[in-house]
Image (cartoon, helix red, strand yellow):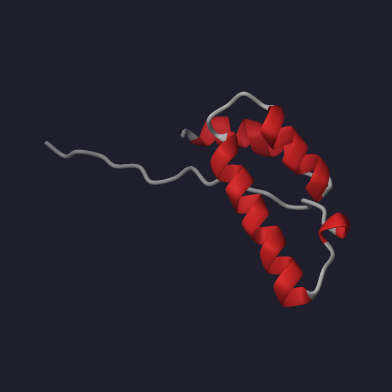
Length: 75
């Protein structure tokens, strides 16, 4: 998955509620959605168990995609 594709998906979910985010990620036909879906689901489960937050009250306020690793071959 490229960082550009992941950024496009992240831009769609930033600022939305947890439930709305899951619906969006299920409907976008992009391979980048599944890893982001798993990440959001895991973060919500952690917030629910560690902080006692209700999943209905969660909002995706910040989301970033780093460029990733760049490998160069020296000749």
